[in-house]
Image 1 (cartoon, rainbow, N blue to C red):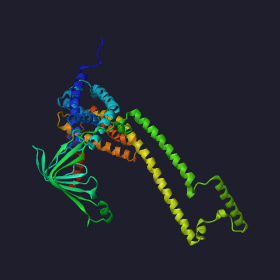
Image 2 (cartoon, helix red, strand yellow; image 1 turned 45 degrees about the horizontal axis):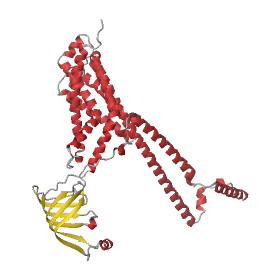
Image 3 (cartoon, rainbow, N blue to C red; image 1 turned 90 degrees about the vertical axis):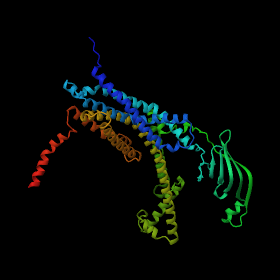
Image 4 (cartoon, rainbow, N blue to C red; image 1 turned 90 degrees about the horizontal axis):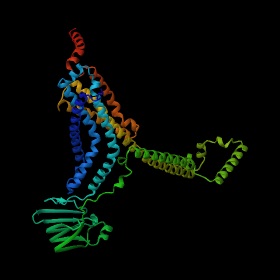
Length: 505
């Protein structure tokens, strides 16, 4: 008779874990989303953004925090589920029935492996698309003009090139009273000052301009700006004073959200999947090697040891003159020209020639140093590009692998501490995640600054936490009293007795 490989025990354990996983995943996404929104709150507040744009922003932001929320959700769900099993003595009953811990967690391991594959697929296929749309929207929001809301009793600088002061407002009529306006759109030295008893600001029909209506006021403006710039003084400079009953100003103020072109981010590392990242790394690495060989060849051929490049004919003439002088020195008994000391040759020159030689040497050395610095900057740009892409490539794997590591940390810890609910498991999960985040961020910075290879920096957290997961799994499988205070006191009791005896003696 055929028997299903899925046992009732597997269904029970899976149901408990998956329910908690979905719940903790939503909680983790919410927490990380609030952190992300807080980082970009300046791009949203005061811009008059429509609800549809805000909804779009939150959807893309949720997608951006999912890869980081998955490991934390797996850790918390496994801790709570196995803590509940231990607290209800169900785990003890399973072990008493001859079921080992590895048999109990077997269906969960398969479920977590599916989560790891899903996390990699999400990071590789969905995340690049949402990242491009998210950062395009963020850059567009940063360029959007703020919502026009002029406060009372203070200067408002939300309009580029203008400062507006209003003493009192009438929101019902839309009127502004006791206004002062500084127009420095043409520069601070060409500023125009206007005061008015009242005014009104309205948008044009296409939302591209502000219509500023001023009533019963005066304006002050310098006339001879060129003379003011030339003399640098304001004395005896004529100005114009205008008294008006009504004055209108047209000010550029685009209040609409202008979408940034997504193609701007096409070559960024956040917009590429694994295959595209590998192709970009290979192509830029080839360009970097070719550029380095080109620079080194150019330096050797043109400026090696301070020699400029000469034609073949010039080299032949120099060689003939050298051989001729060598023969003359040998005939005079002065020894070979090759044995001449450069210091003695320099000392034999006149003061004027010495100064000229030193000036030429300094100029050539400075030119060579500038050329080397420029070459280093060019090659460093290639290397930074490669490092960013390598970091993103490894990140797609490390975040998925972290789900598996955190399961083998959370499940044994829950089986050992045997505490369910949201108390102890949440505290332990937060502590473990903070440790993971610090180690991962440290490795990321080391890789970004080229202090470590990219693979070492991005896999640092996995190298550190994987042995901890293996150790905890072994302790849980052998029913070790790792967090039992009584067991630790028994272990330390002989040491405490010896210390006590030494103190009495």
